[in-house]
Length: 512
Ligand code: BES
Ligand code: MN
Ligand code: ZN
Image 1 (cartoon, rainbow, N blue to C red):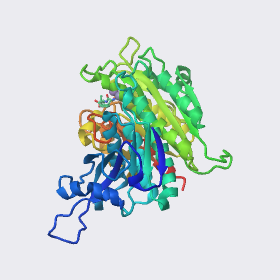
Image 2: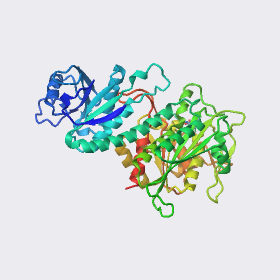
Image 3: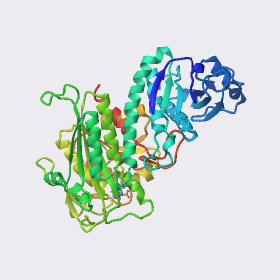
Image 4: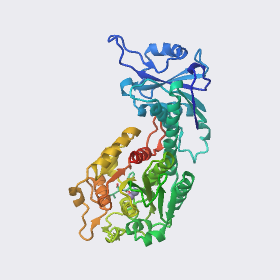
């Protein structure tokens, strides 16, 4: 789908469908009269076309509520779609992102291939660039369906989306659209990776996709496999990888800001570490058959980091970023690791690796990340963030509304929260603490890889914390958020691409 920007009289715009936002406005002076929803355009022909239905009270302008008018009199467009934004005082870029998405997904099943969306002006606290960016993101994210492997759905994608701005807003809107394209296209790149089946998207193929993206985007890249894991003595990562016929992939992408000089650069080096289990059977501690097919999305953390690198390559913040992806298949096999095994993680400089008692081979994500986090520090990272579909316990705790977030450093977390505020993605901070660490002490090794039934998301985070040492760090457990179970008005069910935009905004915040 191509995004366009025009400035013209809305009623004169020829389009298959013209979408206009409507708010539930409670600022009406008359306390007795039930305030009618307010159309966010001053165009008299559109006001006239919508007047009757708005005064009927049938349309409440609730968020994402839609109402279609066919062949509206006085309009060049063949259809007028009213899209609700909810209460005026509560409209945020997030509301607008969803509204634009709702308009796009209204078109798709009706085989309408182009739409125009009127960018609303005069919303308090929302500048023209933010409005255009949100609408662009919403439209592009909504146009995505996980239909790569479906032969019956090829006719549903939109070809064009035209945003309509006022003449004064044009320059700001253009900048907002460009930014929206960078963020949304990267998120959709992540969603394609997450949707790809495990027989197609093996660790090797994930490495190839990362390399292709890096090459196109102008990032440095290295993709290693078994030999490098041996050389670096990544015993935790290798424990998981050795049970599969598919070789592992250790993917390293590097973004260097313009004019980067290793001798003089003294800014932060941000490390983005992703869990890339392309299929998680559970290994010898095998998972039940029911729902196991979903475990293809156990590489969503890795895909999110690759998506974030995609954004970073395009928005070019003045900060160095290194992405480390640890990818493997977790399989039961004659060579697979077993409960009772002891794995030795990668050495940390001159300190030897940690001994890890394997209790459950299904707690594999923390093992690959242990070596990934250590390696990122060895590469010089001063701040770390990891993303992983790490625990079912996090889904039990937060459901499919918030992703779990953990941090050992308040300022770093505050910065992350500000980034999430900007993108509208929901994260909820969960605690860390010595009492939780006590649950992963082992009788025969330094630590064990599970901490029992209770507080499973936290004990997993405590396990990772061992490998970040003193480095400021954020851990995102996206197990419940990486896959959308039911379609919404503005987004398809399937891979969500969660965390891509927030991680990229977090990175950008270090540049200013
Ligand atoms: N990949 C799973 C976690 C997961 C669960 C992701 C549900 C997405 C949806 C992870 O590797 C896992 O199996 N975790 C175990 C840990 C346990 C054995 C300590 C879990 O959560 O059950
Ligand atoms: Mn597992
Ligand atoms: Zn897993």
